[in-house]
Length: 353
Image (cartoon, rainbow, N blue to C red; front, top):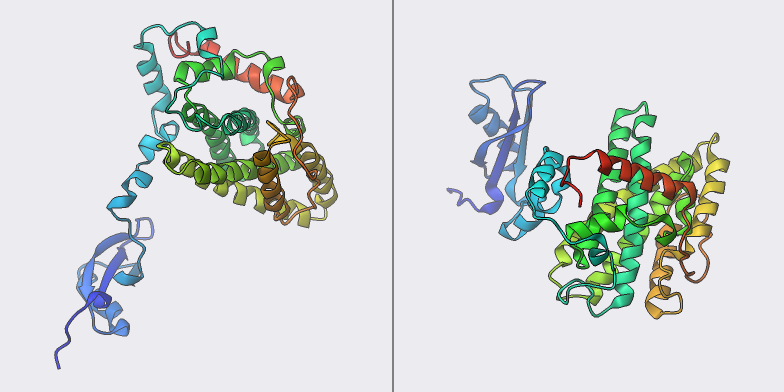
């Protein structure tokens, strides 16, 4: 009896013709039996060329993007800082802009658009702005550590996390109504005494402490992003919030891997246990915008649960959120501000306002 093909009979074929070439999609075929599909693919797509690798995958077993996924796949519109030539393009684009108003008109965080994310939730806004400051400092700190590794892939990973931390800090401000000039003012023109970074920022010293800080900051952003998605279901900025959450989850997995490794190695076990205790003990103010508020308490509880699942030493997060204090950050914040201002001073005129 002839077989009537259905969707499960269609296979996609991928071939590699040389060890230095990429695996590419060669075409499709129909086979009534799984065990004969590979041989049909070899005869169909391997007759003229010697193949190094042949993959045959049932189409119904593949995860394939749809038209609804185009926004998620459009990386250039979501993460322009990761595209080649972005710094040069930004110089060109911003140098053509008219002069912006003076810094004081842009630096007041109480001014925001009515359509900005969390316009009716000032407590949500303040928590996000505080985490943006923490991410800015973390990103600058990681930038100093890129050249510390013999392992090139690890150095690239640290560079990528640092770059995304700084980019997420800017994205957060944009979501809450800041224009680009106001973002620059907030990060580069505020005196250190005006910053309210977490006490954990002062622990960004050696590598074990940096791993612990990276873990708690990524966990905090993830928790606040999930809460924002639940509280603001109709906000137009939610795709950007979801993107930040997904990338911070990747960062969290990376820091957890390092935490588990440092906690397992006899040479670093005690050192990391001390560092993790100090960082988590100081991180109680990550959601300290309104420590008496229900939102802060809820977020703190979720953060504690997420951080405790690190696979490393035990967390010492306090049982309730603590208030942030202006002027903290010590030499770590001072160095980050100095580095950023030095870079800005060397840019061409008009890049920063």
